[in-house]
Length: 119
Image (cartoon, rainbow, N blue to C red; front, side):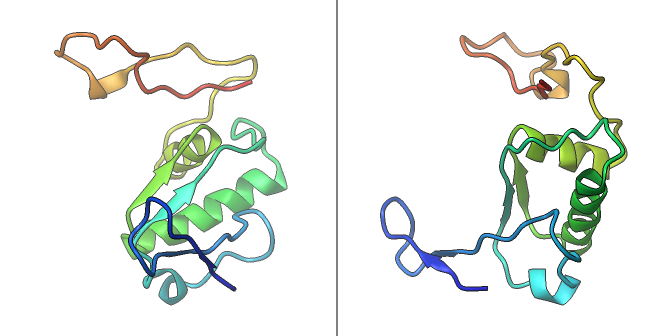
């Protein structure tokens, strides 16, 4: 997989590889162990639907969990991570924003709390 070298805002020599979590078989554990981090951005995947792309994303995330590599999920990426960790996907029609344990017992900030949002 060819890497894309970026220079603005990242350490010199940092590379980013883009890999689909829904196409083909997930990479082997040893293939992911060399990464410093893995990012799952937003996508149209609906984790509450039993579809091939949702199942493929879960298989990919299971490999990420096996490696212990730090990962970050945004939007659908967060849903993939949560479902792979044993949570259920959001119900069709959306979910209500919830801060969960992140802000429990703390003053509410002036910005929206982290949440899972489904379309």
